Length: 317
Ligand code: 2P0
Image (cartoon, rainbow, N blue to C red; front, top):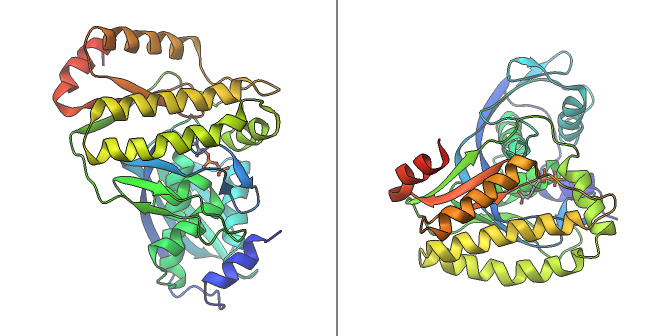
């Protein structure tokens, strides 16, 4: 097995001393339209399939300061210990044992409620570390490094539509994200909060249980192989119904694989299901509205800007 340290040695220059006192960076959160669910390598966060996301306007701001001891503030308050450990374990990959950091991270999006904040978090952190250490690494390299913190973070280095190529190499050097060359300003993605409470199981554990126990997981790579080229075609031709239909069914297929695992994993709350029925009813009545869902109870709405008022009125937003 290749370790993170071995992989990093091939990508970065050896001396690991900061070249400045502090550095600040921002990364957008991203929402997958074709989901990443399942790893082929848990150490390097190498995915079973490719995935495709859209970056949001909002995300995470992170400042890393050189300090005499490690400390971490999340949204102005002391970080939960598990979160701080994950951040500093990640920093340990890049610094020597005498370098300590004060990290301030501000999420514009609720943490751990399925709003994809770890994606922007590790992306902003690697950008800040790149500046602090003066690596001047290219975005492909930074995408690979962000992936080591959290898989979906490799997509948050970019705005717009972003594809994470799963790659095939055991060292993961070909598993990185790249922006698509297409913009679609009319396409809207909007959070529909159902609950901001902590989710019952984190996505990392949930995807591991799914891969190891779900009899439906064997169909997931084929689902993505079918959906990915078709959604890229929909993006290129700006075919909203094709995009919405593929994104919605891809998300539901991901949840179906989880449901069949043992123990079963179900992120839907009763209100999530009621909202799905409401959206399907509205769509049957002619409103062009779809949704996607991640590892949490909240829905993300997909619609076109021209229908914004109708969507908001219909859902009481
Ligand atoms: C995604 N999710 O593509 C999928 C859809 C959640 C549902 O990526 O273990 O926090 O750090 O690689 O990136 C959430 O998983 O997992 C995720 P790790 P990550 O956005």
